[in-house]
Length: 93
Image (cartoon, rainbow, N blue to C red):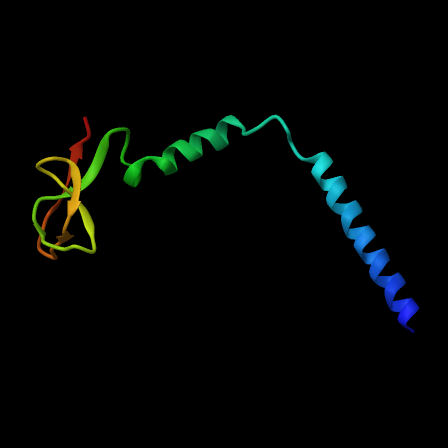
């Protein structure tokens, strides 16, 4: 019985390795498509609002644990947005 379990395990490991090798050979090695690159650029842009245009808050409160983008300077500073603060946009220079 132990011999059967060993052989079955060996066959399963060799089969899994073969399937993994076959799929790795069939993968696209040319890199990302133009559509994938465009999607990554849109998603990596902050808030998806366009290049250089960022979401910010006009009013913030002090906080050592959070950061928020302040509209006056368009920089991330220690603070927290308040519920009544209007959300705006700023252009990062």
